[in-house]
Structure formats: structure tokens, C-alpha cells
Length: 63
Image 1 (cartoon, helix red, strand yellow):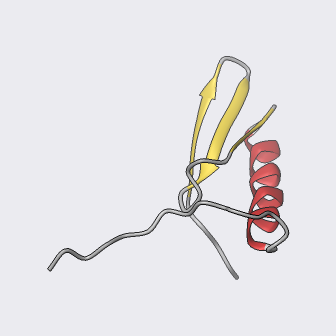
Image 2 (cartoon, rainbow, N blue to C red; image 1 turned 180 degrees about the horizontal axis):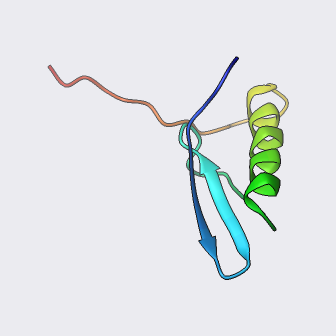
Image 3 (cartoon, rainbow, N blue to C red; image 1 turned 90 degrees about the horizontal axis):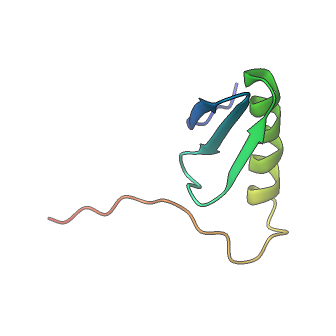
């Protein structure tokens, strides 16, 4: 099973979150399950190649 990490929090009645690898692209949901479904859709959109100029998070080794 494929997986990816995400950051999420609740703000009043909304659940907000983003994929750790794509911190510039946030989404929301009315429940945690709704947020997770929206994050799955967002992942498919960002990795499909259909959206130009998608920014990603990377790690650089300095030495």
C-alpha cells in the first residue's frame, strides 16, 4: 500500500492540511475523513503532470 505523510489541524469546525512533500498546496474538509479524501485528490492532481510548475519539498545534504 502506498502512503505519504501529511500535516493537519482542526480550526473551529474545519479540518485543514497539506501533504508534507507539497507544503504550498493546502486543502480542507468538514471532517478528518473528508480532509483525507481531499488530500488523496490533491496528491493525484499534483503528481499527474497536468499542473505545471508544482513546487516540492526536498532535503539537501550539506557535506
